[in-house]
Length: 103
Image 1 (cartoon, rainbow, N blue to C red):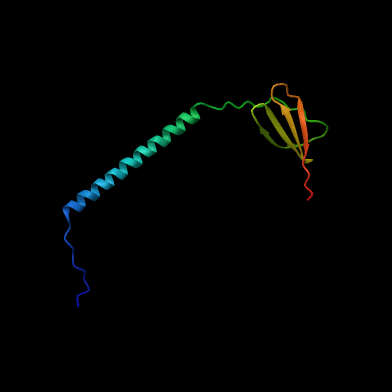
Image 2 (cartoon, one colour):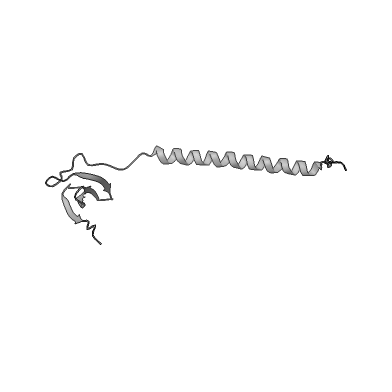
């Protein structure tokens, strides 16, 4: 018995077909990469429309833990498990929400 595999003849049409497939895949990947880079550039070039308040007057001895904001409000979460919601235009305290952790 001969353990050496015999060389199969190479079909030139199959080689041409594979070359076209590899070229098409390469072109698709390059175009996709260019599109992704262009989207990043156009998205981040606009900058941010977010404006943060210069100062926030917290009531009493409240210690801030987290900050978030919406279109016309911003909120501060305090160490005492309260959420203080402020008006973005006037900076006045709109609402205090007490977070109850008991079940």
